[in-house]
Amino acid sequence: MKQNISTYKAYRIENSGNSYKGSVKNMELGTLAKDEILVKVHYSSLNYKDALSASGNKGVTRNYPHTPGIDAVGIIEKTNNNSLKVGEEVIVTSYDLGMNTNGGFAEYIQVPAEWAVKLPEKLSMKEAMIFGTAGLTAGMSILRLTELIKPEDGKIAVSGATGGVGALSISILNKLGYYVVAITGKTTEREYLTHLGAKEIIFRNEIENLDKKPLLKPLFAGAIDTVGGVILENIIKSTNAMGVVTCCGNVASPKIDLTVFPFILRGVALIGIDSQNYPMKYRAMVWDKLACEWKPNALSDNYSEVKLKDIQPKIELMLKGKLKGRTIISIID
Image 1 (cartoon, rainbow, N blue to C red):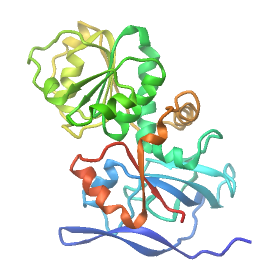
Image 2: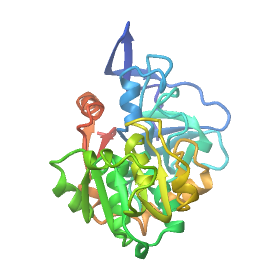
Image 3: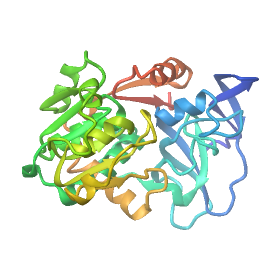
């Protein structure tokens, strides 16, 4: 018989003036609204948005105290929705989770049922969070890229290569037979990137310092860019005729300074990836692929695991750009 739970633990970010601090607090469960579900969280994961939310970035989270965590996986404890049943294992990522809705850094989340994807049979809960939003974003990027670019077409560049999206993109593309060129600012991570499947490594300053011409020598058949700014500009200018570049991040800059020449003289396609509100039909498709033919052989080599109480040091490393791979949070003892 299930226990009647009224309180739960959550990693709460509280503010005092301009200072933001996180700690584990006891929270009370609310009443489920129509079409909501209550999920007992087993794992969450740390993403850049979580680090921003935990440091008081009002572009991510408007009001505090707040529970970050844009990723969660667990078991439905209660439901007010006919399509999902108590006991089903579900993944909840993105939408407003962890932004202005209390997120996955907690023992329970209470969310609209339409945010949940049933956990694929061939994916464990831990594996789902090693992927998390980073893996989903990588998968969305790869889905769009592989629609138009095949392994025989040439090299694929991946920027921000040691980050969550970049590292998983390299692993998946390598498994699919693509020749991957990793772009990174971390000169000490050559061995790590090679282990993921990168065949070549280009350091960030080499890409940033390319010529300012509107078109550059073609180097890549396609690319997955996770950082934006000058790196994205120069990747686009260095992409082959009829190449494809996906973009999903702006940590370097949200701005790009380009002419239309790569697009109208080479036919390069630039595809934006919106992982937050990606349509559920395609979201479920990507999760199914991640569970099966896209699952990297070395997926378990690409993460570290912490408890709720030990999140803060990882957040600080992420904000400094010193975290590599994925960090998952084990909620169940």
